[in-house]
Length: 145
Image (cartoon, rainbow, N blue to C red):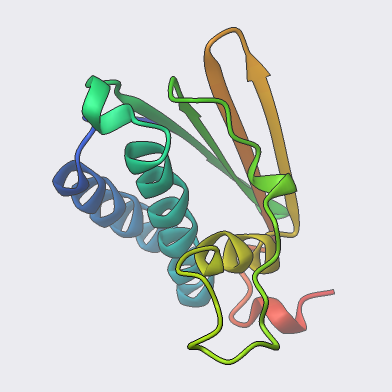
């Protein structure tokens, strides 16, 4: 199964896209834990593109491609914001106290931790982030082989 979802450059559109995606994945039998991870990943990557990549300010839409089979669920977010590679994002200083840490960075850290594979490429003026989650139909992805 493959879905192509286009999103207007706004947080409201992102919320609607995430709700639509969740409903579609649950109806197809994707595990609830995996669906929760998908929501977090899409929320983080898209909101970063909207704000830091300036897609919202410049009115640039985002496109999400989702493919799922028994082996993997693959998310591919395409957007035309400023070039940014989330694979190379600096790790937050987790050992530092909350007061000593700069704001930001935890969302991408979570994406990196949740993804079984995380890839980035820039084609022309387009950022393409590909996230793979293995065994999407497992009740508990942590126990999947």
